[in-house]
Structures are given as structure tokens and as C-alpha cells.
Length: 113
Image (tube, rainbow, N blue to C red; front, side, top):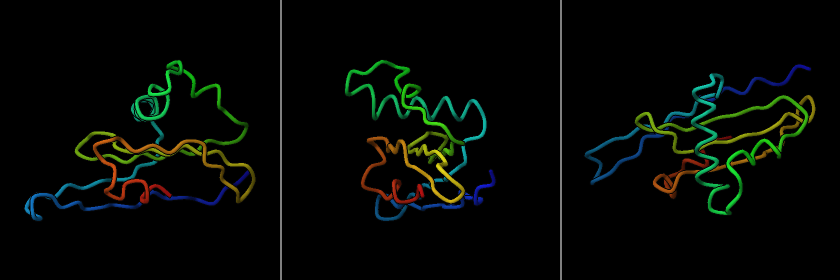
């Protein structure tokens, strides 16, 4: 099945301290195992651990279909992530969306399509 190509190309500049410091958030497609581990850690910390759920609970939520994952990075740290599953040729179902506490209220979630 061929899906529309979704290209993570968003970049957000965030100004702090009256605009003197600039931080950049990059959105990346999760394709490597090291990135997938970082995204899993974010989902665990933000979504599952506060509810007292087991560490590997994410895998019990899997659906059939091709997975699509994005993560937001700032200074090498994962600050946001999205996991979705293709349900058809043009339909994508959002499964998980998380933003780290330190990055909330800064537009990170809006950058993740």
C-alpha cells in the first residue's frame, strides 16, 4: 500500500531572555532504533509512568498498519513526539502525542502534524 509522503520539515525558533538566546526545535521522522528508544522514553515519562502503567504498555496498544512516528528535538533532547498508524491509503490514526514538561506552552505540539 502506498501512502502519501509526509515530510517533517518544521523548525521552530524559540526566543528566551528577551530574545537574546535562540533555541531551535527540529521535527524528525523516527527511522533509527536509537531515535525510537528516545521516543519510547518520552512516551513512558509523559504518558504512562504518571498513570502507574508498566514500562512496555505502549506495545499493547499496537494496531495493524504501517506506523508513522515523528519526534521534536531541541539541543539533542527529545521534547515532543507523535505516533500514528496508517489505516488506509489516505487515513492516518493518531495513537500517541506527548510533549515534555519543559517544552509545553511553546508550540511544540503544533509542529507535530
